[in-house]
Image (cartoon, rainbow, N blue to C red; front, side):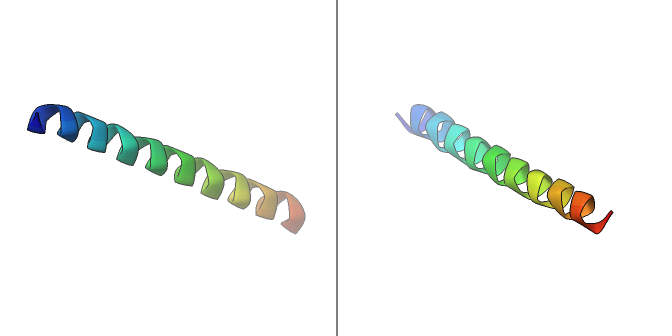
Length: 36
């Protein structure tokens, strides 16, 4: 049971980090476009 919970927990964390990193990447990209 703990192994399944660990995989679900890790999958949720990786999804959140991926979403957050994508949001930051888009924000920085827009900031660069605005600066130029």
